[in-house]
Length: 146
Image (cartoon, rainbow, N blue to C red; front, side):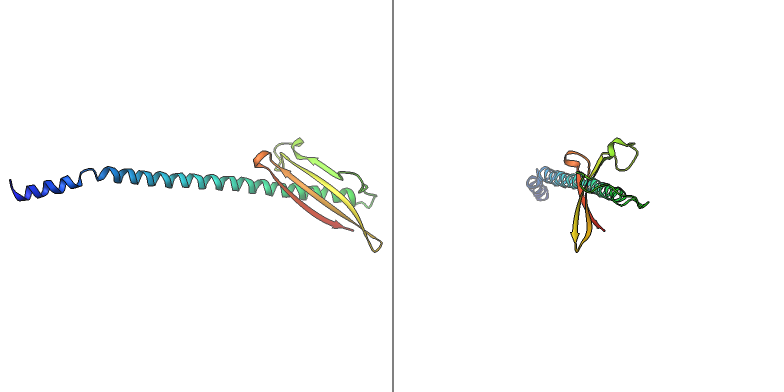
């Protein structure tokens, strides 16, 4: 036999089977990268959903405060609602048309009078809640008026 053929046969014998472990390694690495990207996408989606619910809860709390201020200090100058009622104001936005942005939200407002130097101030604390279960958010806002 030719020495060149013997050398080629030895090199080929040493390289046999190298492609299969390399292919398994590449497939495993790609599978891990795809799984990590899927997990990142899911986390991002959940975060975005919670951020939206949190913003909706904030707007529900703000709406509750504005409606409560209108009840406490009516714009026409008439006597407002007594601050003693508990809750001062509560509303479930789910009972309204589902086309509104605050559907599946609710608000509860508490009122507390505080007297400082013979001046009466009212503290309104509004808690807006949107969503249910793990996809729920709650935001609280507070305002003090004279």
